[in-house]
Image (cartoon, rainbow, N blue to C red; front, side, top):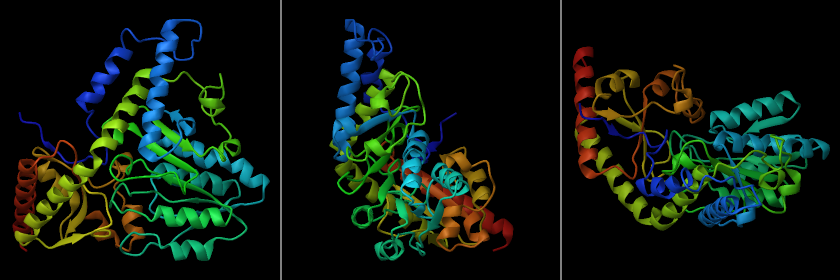
Length: 385
């Protein structure tokens, strides 16, 4: 049986073979503990970890010592948001501004902080799914200690004006956190206006189980660790650093830094080609989010009158796509992201998410479009439309 065409690169990306090649030696002869300071095995593993730290830092314009390795984006987001909370409370700055488009792990942190007395206020985004910096400026005040806005949305692919928001937050004395799990390696990023930035390896063709939190050097003393132990990662994340996984993250970051420009051009062409075929077929397509200000490989849309699950059921043996965030896919409830941009429940339940990626070629685009067109036409006939 032929494997379905994989078009769910927002959920995860396949491990790049070049990343695997970089990792394999550190599973075998390079098995040393990077924290063992008394022999060559530990020294070699430590140097590999530090080389990866430099590669990750280079991808986002950070200093190597500002990179803290974690088990993934969920832990990094928790460390960022919950780690700065005690200091904010001590300073009496209980206000938090957030976009309503954040990943479930950020939303869970915000709910926990609200239960602890923080005043979480959500910024409006409108149908395009973009935060207006003027709305941020209007809501910043002496009580606001933290602003959190993701760089690129995991469902609709919308890109946020993070540099502008960061400048406003800094001028107001608030910390600025950016969840860049979906953005890193796909669009240029810089820590210049950001205090805390979250990264995930498996979203940029690296291994699962590793990520990072970039913490601006001046902000580091204000972050309290969540995991205590041996004091690794400059005291912010105790536990033995998994050298093979970290090497994989570093290799993935280096590849992305070298290739993202050309890859973005290629993916935009594929994205436009797929959409054009769906529209030429006469399907009533409604694109969600800003049509231009989005990740190069993202398409989030609905076919008016059709349920997303019904479409997926017709194509799943040929094309792997989804309705939204993988961590919430078991819940048949309308996406909070889509509701935030104004879709009603019926429209939100009709949404399909397509994530094109490094392994996507033009034949894949054409085959996926043909499968979707066929499925939608069949469903329309059955409904008598």
